[in-house]
Amino acid sequence: MTEPLTTEEHAAVTAYALAHGENWKDDLLADWMDGRTQGTLQHLRNSRGPSWLADYSLADWPKSLFSNEQRGA
Image: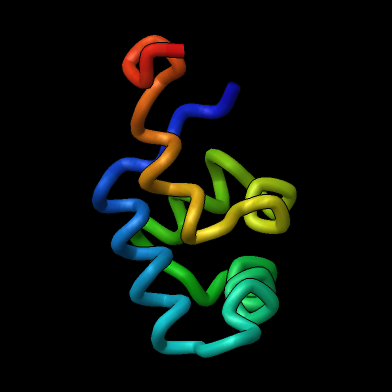
């Protein structure tokens, strides 16, 4: 299982999504491929890659902070 995003990583992705609207994933992928990102967003590209972005949902982040053990499962 992939580690959940840190608060900083989630904040960077959320800010990008809010700034780019409905097609934010397509825009971020294009920015990644053209080397137009820096800092946290570039780190996510290098560490998680485009396949992670395709599967990622902003709504999943809070749920991923809790392991099954913490949820009592």
